[in-house]
Length: 68
Ligand SMILES: [Zn+2]
Image (cartoon, rainbow, N blue to C red; front, side):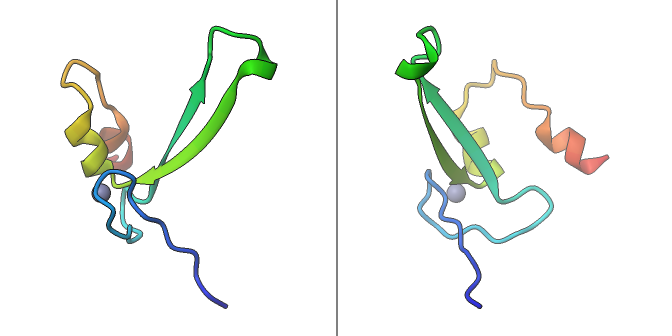
């Protein structure tokens, strides 16, 4: 059986399973609208690639949770 692979939406590289990866990002558009106007898409990424693109003002607790 072929294993499903994940491709990082930021760097385009495949994502190997490790302590933090693969990650997924769910984007829900129109969150201030009614449910029938909302649409969801899931993206996959490396946690490190995600960290590179988010502003440092956004707290990221995920690594801390995994390392405990
Ligand atoms: Zn990546």
